[in-house]
Image 1: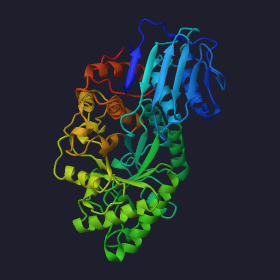
Image 2: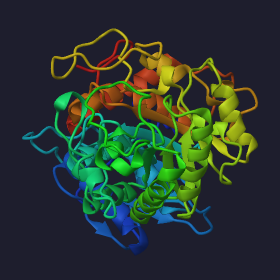
Image 3: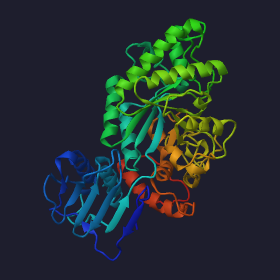
Image 4: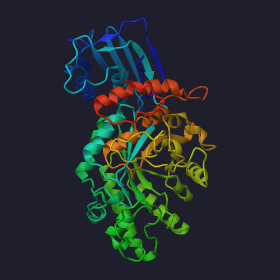
Length: 509
């Protein structure tokens, strides 16, 4: 029996009932205000049916797929119902986002996409099992971070990744846009950030950056799939690209050489009084322009691995950085090190990237943000970082070694699935956690196929931890999960998404 990833809050397969068959008369019925969701479903079903179902604003009849938007929904809510019988498919939600999440579940219940060149199925051959689903997410924030700095990825590559993530009900794309190796977002008031700072990447692979129009394409494409883009401008460390473009941002007023390596912790904005005007103007301009491009509520300001910044300078700079970000009207997110500051803006979010067993000051710094009225995104590196090698060292798509092993790696699918966000830091429980995120850093990932190979299937585990209810006994059933992931393999193959056929999953031939 096929399943859904992430697992719904409630699902009942009616094994004694007849399935629903898509026939010539089948339509997708939806009111005008959710026509775009219905049209997107029709386009996706075309890859299964070989034809596009008509979309109608009409009363549902037998053999239809109906999308119904109920009144009185919670703003931003994603709960939905999905009922399949031999008479039709009924999808209901109080929000458009909920309707879209329901269509993602429906797509997994359908056969995988028809291979290119294959003959289309006969009428009535495409069936959906009879099922009743009532579903809602556990956490509001379920993200994936893509590092586009170490290696740069074109707009079409990012859109391709968004499409694959959306099916798993991921609702955040965190774009790591700046670092030592490159600056990837156009800032009109500081044009050499991309003119000089955008010219490099790891290993001399060439640079690149997103124009404002490019970035808008990504934001709009994600929004159509109810995914919010969170831009990250990593400060005050990880700034060599900016320091190479503008001498006045450096302690000594001398531009740094562009960097194509993978070491961290050697760069920093200047906190010296003689550099204050340039630094503060830089922070204000960059935050303002990026915020103007970003309709979502968050700006990520980095804050990690500032090893070359003195403790006093770090506190000074974090206060100035977070104030500049908050002045745009956005809520601030930073890696958990920002908890060293005692004066963070109200509502600041800490992104925890320590281990399941917190080391050094990671727990204290994260807790400091919560004490100041903030919340936490959980990204424990030893289970949620997708750039860590797959367990078993499987072959890579392009024949070279992919992934890193620093975070207690390699990481298996079972490792990625077995952890519990509320069990990592004492005192940080369900109410203090905004959600979970799986970052992928791209030191070794040169192409979007490399990224996908590292991301899939492990991202399915993170998606399920973020969406599905916490198991009552605290233990996740890996074998049951693996069986559902196996059914995703055919969908990934049909969509052209690269994935790693890890051990422990009964993949279909």
